[in-house]
Length: 503
Image (cartoon, rainbow, N blue to C red; front, side, top):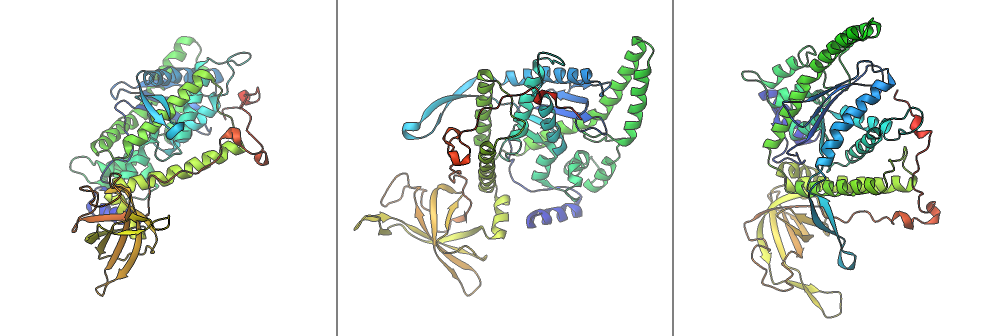
């Protein structure tokens, strides 16, 4: 935990109510998300047991597997889930908008959908469930022995796409509710306890007349608030085992159906409390104002959605069971860039997040005490001069950044700055002189356009974080050198891939 989050947690434990960790919301919350609350059979990694799914808070669709060890019933569950999710995805593929990629001669006009699907699950284990269910369905054969409905591998491809993007912190197509709430509020309990959705929400939104600590203790009772899944409560497992045994031993279809309806009722009762908590979490997140960079990240999600939908229409091959070395390296580079960019964007959008970097010495805040608008320095060509104004800031905190460090201010993100001098004053404060470059509406000599050069008395924050830093430069796949195996071959599914078990 960081210093500020630790202080917020201590404050929450004292006041009995969660403390905000941010001033804005850093993820997109769609107007019509698809909520999935899954359950799996105890003792198996991904044996579907039941799910509540849908986009209407008041009308969830119940999916159950009355005998999860039956292969045919498992795939009927996948078919029913596919019917819901694929219809939702198709509903996002209606209107498009143009956008431009590249620069200069490489500029290209493309189109992307105005909407992208958003899948919400209760917790991190729900994301793992989505990944595993995608892996176990996307490679299934639609012909021959053990053939499945074509919607099953289609579901698997999309679930794998959701799970792959969930690794990118800036993406909002697949989100775990506990992670989102814990990223925006600090509770008085441990981080592991924050993975329990009911107790986490109890701290953030306690009932009338109660406080977070008391409400969280009450929320830990599985009889009142069953686990949010995919794992089930051991006490409930015994009840379920008895019902499934009776279901298997029923003497006729009528008796089996009656017990089956009882199984459905019990499973629904286990998931409905979590379903209501999920939508309450959505309401709480929507109450937070959206960060300035969130629409841009959602636009990137919409672009990725449009490109993957186009790929499926044109090619349709599923994702490989394992990434080849070249693709794994490219994916790792993309992930590293995405993490750095997301952290920088969060800090630029949110003063509470930026305060963390001030404590670690990666940022400082000061008041402008002087400026030199008419300053010029020697340019690259002999005898040339370039306009480089300076500003001087005074701060009461220690500045640990070295002379020559490149910094930027969230107030003027398009204007670069370099530290020319750092002096410690007799009273313990610091004076910092910055040389500015760019951000003057393309002007190359004074006077600076209004608002582009900081005024005396203005308070500014400067940081080494840069949300527009250039990403890693790797060659295109088709240009992979022979020393690295040459261009990777397209993945071709095999019969062995389609035989992977669900255990």
